[in-house]
Length: 366
Image 1: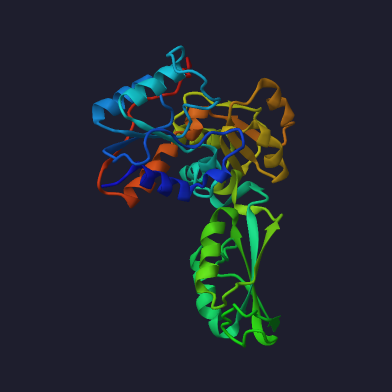
Image 2: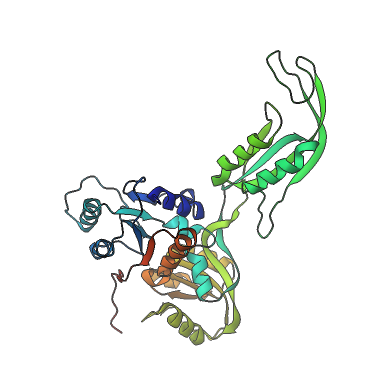
């Protein structure tokens, strides 16, 4: 028997909620965490049609990219679409989970999927986020260093880009004196001790702090563990807004438009003027990311794919890159595959289905 909370924990581990934007509303929005999962329905948006589909298929958990409760609810009277959807979900014991900007910002999330669909190579975050890394410093006897180090690395510390198990180790002398109630691992109580120790340093992402500290305390031999946690201003390369990579081969602007149109199944693409330039380096940002135009230009992107670009923002490009607006729904449509792959790889005791409802509220006449 799988409970909804187990699903939530798996999704939150992949894309920690703390990596969502401040304005966002992610996680379990409706439902009982302790309810048993019957089946899961995955969608980009939640509408009354999607709720009806969940009822028809027997799904009691909907996993969506866009949160149905976004600006907050003060009443549930059915006065608008959001209230009616939430009421219908509650009435039919259907839980709702939203993975939004945390799945946008995480490596392997929405923008990684866009890069994968375009077969981009050497992909990196377009704008990595600061203040998401911490440094651990621990003082430990050399005899216990290897076991301790392995435990801390297993907890998730020590990752820098393409490298793992990274640390710095300095040998020195530690001093301490235990009182009459102490139980020193080495030395004697109420006597000054001078012990050869290793200063062990490594880094870890902030969302792993609990796991890393547990590894420290459970694998250190001292009665009182001496350790420090420092905030780091370095940008965390695995978390950020947008991504940038390169095409296997450079394309003309019209060839690139054709590739994007076919890849995302779009009927129309809004774009800046054709300048007869070759396209190789591509920046992408699913959803409303026109605010990232300057970042794409600063990273010397030849083209930038996003959505919801305003009229005057096309002027802001100043011919410095080829800007494409492919539509909000179209840019994020493959997010459903991310949820599906995570859940089907982890669980096999219930059905996971992709919604067949096209929730795109925008239609085109081309």
